[in-house]
Image 1 (cartoon, rainbow, N blue to C red):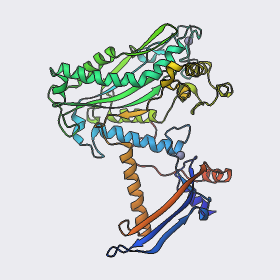
Image 2 (image 1 turned 45 degrees about the horizontal axis):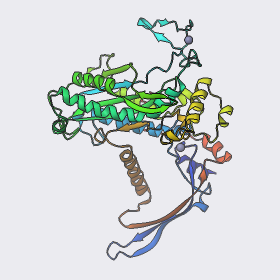
Image 3 (image 1 turned 90 degrees about the vertical axis):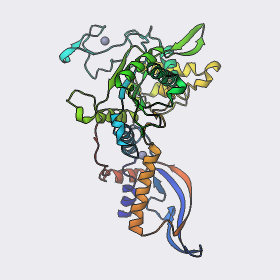
Image 4 (image 1 turned 120 degrees about the horizontal axis):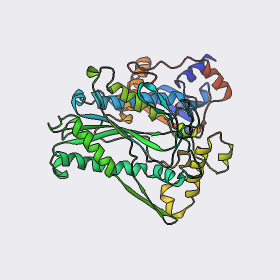
Length: 431
Ligand SMILES: [Zn+2]
Ligand SMILES: [Zn+2]
């Protein structure tokens, strides 16, 4: 039993591990002759307490695996933070570059129940006449489901990715224009980099939160030109967001076109040194983005966090009528040959959105892959310290095949008795 507990503890709280069948053998290698010598270490899955090698699932979503999503959230936090104040291979000078935090919303598809907060925390009445409570499930749902534009709502989500790509092109153009440069010349003076995350509003529309930064021509290593100010960047973001438009399909004689909503929030990010309690700090921005990186459409759909195989499954789900109608609309539009490229059935559970949840431009900061590599290298170093095997003088032969997912009931029960894995320090655990 202690051996099984030890194996489960190695999962760091992952509740849906990948089970692998196979073996791994480490041989000593003579560094002078290159000959393979003794077996130093042999691992066979059949000999493991759980009968398989168990590997973390690494799922990003909190609803799927809380422990792995937490690792992802911390990595995203570091990724965003390093782009804001340096670290993890990014120079600290980026903290002095103009940096903006912007939120891009979808347009209206019909009036929804809302809770408008006025000055001093006062709450105004919704159009329906009610004073909605903060956790009222009616919030974000249409006042009149019969007139709500479900078709446009789903198609907007399906075009949100291309809309962002077009915006990023327009943004560089608008920044160049304000600097009095042609786009070609612009690249020799400055770079615009960003990191963004998608979030679902209660009404089921995707919106984007983005950190946008101006650097010198070589990215974060080089100082931005003198004209590059937070004010100029703010102005360029607003102009580019208004100009961005993507033409969509023509459905039953109706030509769809997609733009961002009028609600655009653009704020300058300050260093903690300037924080008077009101300013938007690097830490707050990174925590905010990292939090949303571990969510899917569940904000709007509740329990639905994986693809549907049949529309009939929808009837059994405990989701709101509004979410159900969005999913059904995506499913129905997904049958159309002319919309095949949008893969609306495969992405119906995401209400049509098939983009990446968090993306960044190449020069923004480090990558999630690089952070994982560092962690893997650290684990290897730990193992080395424990086993005293040297990667330069050992040969590893391994063969693994997939044997399933998850824990047995007994393993799950045992795993629950384990303490949560100790976390990394220096970051907020709850954002
Ligand atoms: Zn997991
Ligand atoms: Zn209302």
